[in-house]
Image (cartoon, rainbow, N blue to C red; front, top):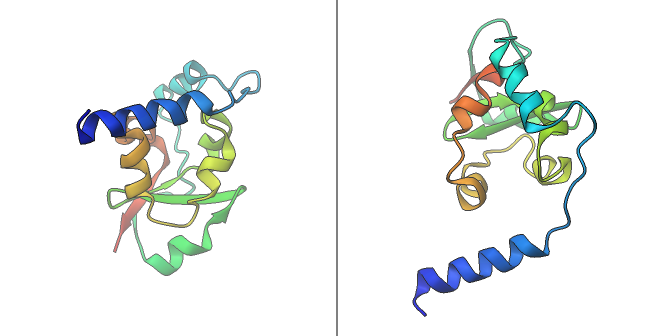
Length: 124
């Protein structure tokens, strides 16, 4: 088995070992899709801003949670209860650049579409 085959086998084993997370009523992926489709501003800012690493680091709690992915800063506070993997996985990277972890675990996810209503701005 080659490197990629071993990596996939480990990934599948880890994925199967995770306990399912029960989402609260009204917090399914379809509910999130409806919220995104509403075009409601979930970012917490009136316009897109430039965000320093220091400012990003201030938003590291469940009730105020920003995260950087691929240079874009998102206020993921509204999304926390919708995340299929649970809140804990996201809180571990609150106030940080989570690009590497995101690409490791969710490379197939279109974060721009998923979190477009949560865009705060760009990391500078």
